[in-house]
Length: 242
Image: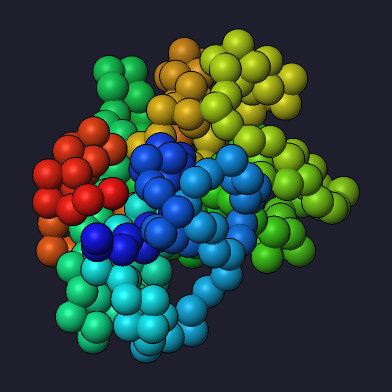
């Protein structure tokens, strides 16, 4: 029986993990909550780059590597493809489709933090939904701005920034209340493509608020690429015994 190593990160990875038996491994970086109700093994932590991952694949006799990490986890995806080649193992990837702008949207794509800062210059009350990255820049907040950061866990901000700890899925009513209460005038978001976090885009559209969208990184080509869990599971069960 082919042993599977699933690299998790997105919500869909858990749906895949729930189909795996005890001989398979669900691997998490350690960010967020670790599920306790799975039949498969759960591993938390890194591997030491592509070489370390390749060594683990060989040691554990993995026959299929599944990359279901976040669309912005470019380094992990690159390591997965490289490790699969080093260990002569098949590598499949779940690539969640990106959101597409709808009528009424005012999306402004930015490539990196420098472009983002320049684009923020005209706004006063931004809402950041980029995870923890903005925490590295709290001492750079302009005097005329107040930042609201939303991350998985609450942590300390400063006099011009509050950090909210919250986990999706988010209800549109709650998002409306957040935008109103904080008087948000610009939304900063990754293009994760997740339905769990999409309501914030609907609220920005309703309120005619611009969205600064961090451009998706280029990801390496795996042996096979799937756009949905159903598509991946169908192929997996037809080719491998899970």
